[in-house]
Length: 300
Image (cartoon, rainbow, N blue to C red):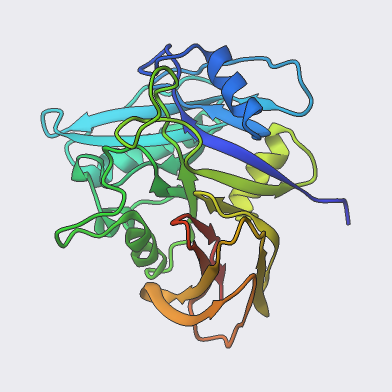
């Protein structure tokens, strides 16, 4: 077997070529300086490219395909990774057909669709997502302050939406993203700053095909601060070990169909042995500093 490596990456960020406040070079430099190995620029309705000239830091082409319906009140945004050409957004009369049309257009352009922030403008929930096909990824966490990631007032958060979609039998993996816009000025909770959410993929080497293949196969975890020292997931067990930081303590929950908690444990190392009736098994790590990590579901 070839050697596998972990690579940290940002899948959702903007430059001043759409609605960000910094140039592509400044954005790339920030992520490289802060410990990332790859990013995907996802400017609205355009492809932004940058050749870093570096073997240890890569920028892959992407786009945030940005549609609106209901007289502009409902935002339907889908990231597209590894595109061969720009995808023009399609706004149909309803959520499901708009999602499906844009997913199909991204696939037709050679890209990988990733469904963004369902709760931005309270656009859609699991009910609509369960009716679309072809998207292998969705945002389980988006760190931008205006996208209602946690839900509330009876509305499901993005993680709950993910579980409800998984419960229908759909195979879709969950990514965590910055949705960064603001590198200039203050870094505050009310601004779309970088460095708050990312993915860590396991791949043979750092290039676009290897990284995107790992995303498609679910060989990655998502995080808002927790690092995993090891992760093993197959049809027999899901086992992980957290990387200790400061004096933080860790709680690990293993989740099955419809968000049911299968097991909870404390400490750096946790393991769940699959029985065969769970539907799927994923793990979520909660750190005492408030950060989290999500592993991808193993489908039973």
